[in-house]
Length: 109
Image (cartoon, rainbow, N blue to C red):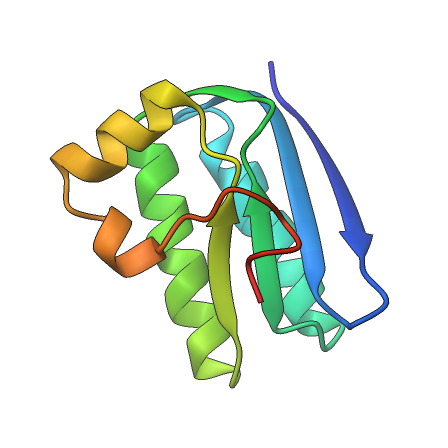
């Protein structure tokens, strides 16, 4: 099971914090959170992965789809605080070059 919390920072950046496993069951929920923020006009997003202990191809797909949607809306999507497992997956798939993970939410923008 995964839980999501969303927050909009003072600078207008939306932060999504998934806690748990980002897999084929939870990936659609991440997409729904991204869509909701974009619909509300928040197009600069950070997915804070500090509490996410696993990601699979469905989770990666949700992140890539979110990146595409935010860019189409004139914004961007960035990753913060990836765990060692997530960093390894991003590097193996070369998605670290596309999603550009950073160490902290504050460092994302």
